Every structure is written in C-alpha cells, then in structure tokens.
Length: 194
Length: 271
Image 1 (spheres, one colour):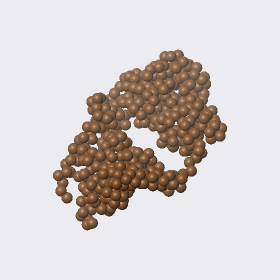
Image 2 (tube, one colour; image 1 turned 180 degrees about the vertical axis):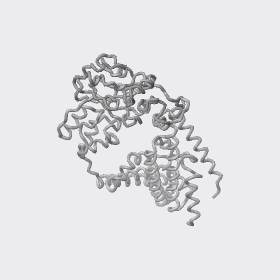
Image 3 (cartoon, one colour; image 1 turned 90 degrees about the horizontal axis):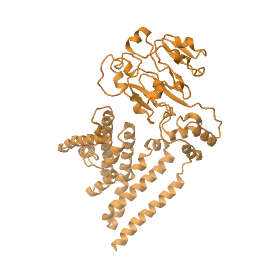
Image 4 (cartoon, one colour; image 1 turned 90 degrees about the vertical axis):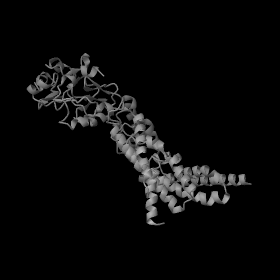
C-alpha cells in the first residue's frame, strides 16, 4: 500500500465519508454524550478503540468462517456476535491488566458494543472486500472521524449553553438544528477529489 | 445442507465465544472490595459532587481506601453517615446540618452602573467591569448559582439569588460557582444572618444600595455574646458564639440583618 493511498484512505474516512455527519452512523452517542467535552473525548477514544478491534475481528470471521461455509448472508448476525463478545473480553482483560485505561474509558466501552457505527465499519469493510491492513486502518480513521465530529459538536454545544435562542428550542431541538448545519458543512467535503 | 452449515458455524461461534468469555471472567477476575457495593448503596447516588469527588462511586472508593470521612456526604446527611460508619466500622463524629447563605440582599435595591445585555451568566458579566452592579461586592442576579443547583434550592428573587434552606443539601456546588464568592456555608439551625458582603464605606454604599451594610457597628455593640465582628465595613457572625437572640436584627438601622425566628427575614422566607 503506497503512502498516497494511505493518505487518501485516511482523509476519506475522516472528512469526506465522515461516519456521523455524512453516513449518519453512530448518531445516538453523537447526540447523547456531546454535552460535555470530557465525556465526548472518553466516548470518542472508546469508539476508536472498539472500531479498530472490531474490524480486525470481523475481517477474521469473514475470511475464516463466512466465506469457507458460504454463509455471507448471515454476516450481520455473525458480526454482532463477534463484536459483543470481543468488547466483553477486552473489558475483562483491561480491568485486570490496565485498570487506569479501563477507568478512563469507563461506561462507554460496554455502551458501544451495539453501536451502529461499529457494526457499520465492519459491514462496509466486508462489502468493499478490503484486505486486513486496509480494513483496520479504515476503521481507525473512521473512529478518528467520529472523534472530530463529536469534539466539534460538543464544543459548539458548550457555546450554545450561553447563547440566546427561542425557549422552544432549548436543549435538544437546538442541538438537532446544529447537528444538521454541521452535517451540511461536512457535505462540502464530498466535492473534494484526492 | 446449507442450513446446517449456517447453524453449525454460527452456533459454534456462539458456543466458542461463550466459553472463552466464561473462562476469561474466571481468569481475569478483579478483586473488588466487598464493602464497595454496600457503601454505594448507602449513598444517595445522585452524583452531585458535593463531597469533592467525581461522584458517589468515587466517594465510595475513597471511603473504602480510608481517604474520606464518613460524614463527607452533604446530601445523605446523618442517615448516610451512620450507615457508612457501620459498614466501615469507624466511629461517627457529630455532624451539624448545614445550608448555604447568599451574602447579598441588593438585587433591585442596588443600583446599576450600566445596563448589561450580554450572555445571561455571572462569569460572563464579570468580564465587563466586574458586572453591571454599582456595588462591586453585590450579586449580579444572573443565576449562575441557580443553574448549577441540582436540587432547585437556589432561585433568583428580585434580581438577587435566594437559597431555600429546606431544599438545600449543602453540597456547596453553588459556593464554587459564584464568581463574586458571595455564597457561604452556614449552619442550618442558625437563625440570624447578615446577607451583605460589601466592604464599601457607609457613605458610598448609601448612594448605591438601599439595604446593604453601612458598617455602622451597632450590631457589634449590641451583641452581648461577642458573636458579631465588623472589619473593613463588613459584618460577619461567628456561629459558634451566636445564640440567635436577634438583638442585632432588632437594632440594625438598615433592617438588613434577618432573624428567621421572627418570620420577617425577607431573604429566607422567599424562594
């Protein structure tokens, strides 16, 4: 894999095909934990971590289980199973081996077991039939893209707290409007050719 | 035949993963302190942060590690402290129920030096010449404290923050939130309060506030318990000495000193 291909893949995953703002995957944590920047950061790190791990595991399942048995149609089911089990395992392992890391990721790690962004990255990878390294890199960069979107959104929401808007828009409505505008801004990247 | 492939492959995957997790949970079992669960149960679980820890779980951890005092939870109060001390097997010291007091009565009675139309937050208003109030010690009335209160105990009445001692749990989040440092913890059972923080000279203050303390020292002289001291035109009560007789409230020429016993304290009755 050449360097320029790597850059293409990374920029594509972070900006042009941003998971949250362009593909609209993982919108629930995007809205749910974007109220404070530190929780947003914790969630983003957990998502990057789980996405990377999950794409590696999903690639293995695809390669060694689904293809030999010719049961590609059960892909979603198998991926859900493997992702849930993987996160569970990683959590158990981290609790013992790296309590500090476990503490900082906290509740977010088990929370995103069933996140559609995590399942989405595995399915996108298997649909496009990419190799192992590409899959893992794509997943990692998509996670970074999620982090970019979440951090942007949480800092905007921090400012929204102090802004004046009609009372009916207080809280969630104004957050949704903001998310829409942010998504619109990210659509601008879709015309970028790299 | 294909259906058996599917059943075997996915079923096998499920069984294998299940076994691996079962083995891992035994292998990686973290030794949790058995007291932690009980401690967490005895705490209110609202994660207000009033104890100075990040939440009830963090406080329970600190308790188990012996780094925190059993009476450290302001919300749980005495009940929680008793339970915690029995779980940990330590002796409980007598705890006094606390509340907080906003040491300003100004609001609409205090004049503004300009009209503030910025962000509705005291910290923001502070950036502009210390806020719109003429009295640099006074409450800005924009309600930063009221927004931080998790119990709805702080409200803004006539442009000044007022605490409802019944709802207040003395978590002291508002104490930290006030940019003027006007909110102080006081004993719940204290009846007499001087809700003014001004250190302005009497003559100056008279022009900018209709209720604030002039520093006339009448209360200091009238108090036979030596509980009131006036320094820098600023009167404060020593609650160790005050027995709540209310003589000072009687004599205060500004009717600033409130006596909750007489039900005429405007500050404590409202809200």
